[in-house]
Image 1 (cartoon, helix red, strand yellow):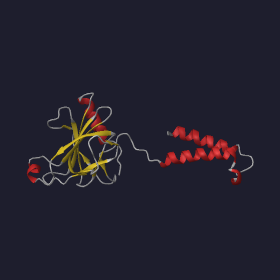
Image 2: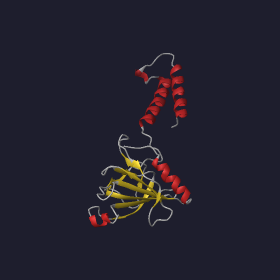
Image 3: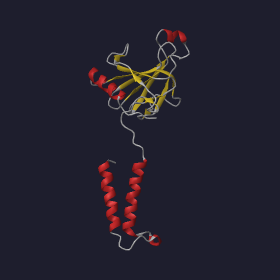
Image 4: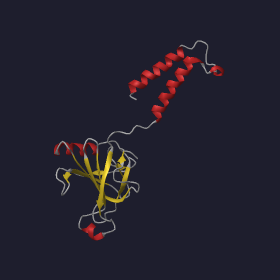
Amino acid sequence: MTDKQRDVLLRSAMADLRKTEHGYKPTNGGGPNWQNAFRKLDQLHKDLATPSVPALVFPIAADPSIHVFVGGLHETGGLGGNWALDFICKAGLGICAPERATITRFSGHDPTDDAADAQGVYGWTTYFITKAGYEYFCTHQGRRYPTLRVGMTVQPGDLIGFVGDQRFRPDHLHLGVTSPKGSADAKARITAVSKAPRVS
């Protein structure tokens, strides 16, 4: 519900209350005007009590006081048109889905494999695609969220994994996106994700 819709509903409830001439009488259900007013006020209360989640969220789920440094825009090696940002932060922080998407596949390497880590390959990777066709690539996870499955739909802010302890370089999430509209739009999309609201 928008603020304007809430305002209209509240004014309507107040108008119902003003129509009541004989006061509230709980023994007979309060009369039709009281009942209408309370029904509308209950509707407002439910709407305000339901947390609203933005369509696009910052991919590190943490208290906003925990600093996350966003690195420079770069193309993901081996994935043409996949523009990415590194979200540099401490290991163990939650990684969340930046928008509503469907999990398409998993890949990666066991984070305890130091040989792979020394070569620059690190951690588990999750791939997901949105209804609009944005394909995300999320890597350097120490752990995936245990209930994730291919074909599952995730909502903005849902946990998909945790930032891994990389040992050989600063801990970070590497998140990239390919756009069906082309490279410029992919850059714009990942930049928008980096500026989106944060969830905890």
